[in-house]
Image (cartoon, rainbow, N blue to C red; front, top):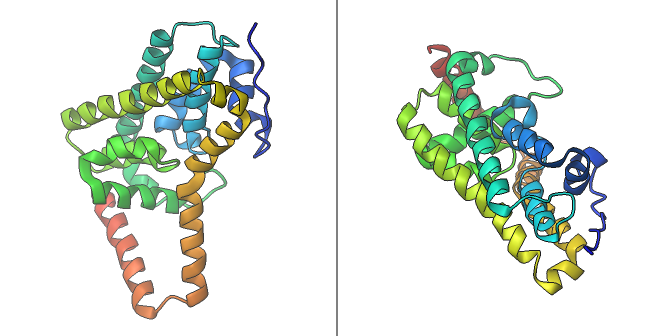
Length: 238
């Protein structure tokens, strides 16, 4: 008889707890979340890495998910790839207007601009690398669409990224979930996974706070404003 995984992830509301989501909505819920986080603007706050890792754990444990690992990985990978495809197509059609869209409760210009900087820095590789960076993974395919990235190139990197993230993180959770030490300390493992997944966000917040404390020089402020203006003008032409 499988031992229930104790949910001690009191890091947010229940609907952000991976185990609660899986126990409530099952495999369909996992696929919907992966799809939404991979390319829909509203999906940036959803759990990604921790959800996939927990999925692998629960498949190994036989609790809530009684499907073979290969099937779960295949469906998750398809959902991840499909999500990025939708994000890319959305970016091609509507993307330029996003850089002129005012901030709202669910949309922040800074998230889009960070994804743009990430895309500019890593080019096509960003489609793969962004899979492992919360928030950025939601906006990067949209930015790729806005930038009119070669579609064939995007598809190739999207498939590679979808496999590495969707299958890789799930398989990691599956095999680690069978290690006695991991099984007896599962709550701490899940907390660590969540912590690692939000580490980039914490780093950005700390860097912004440090910059605010030391003050921004007029030159730095002018350069930042010029970069934002050029970005908006560039995308406004498409």
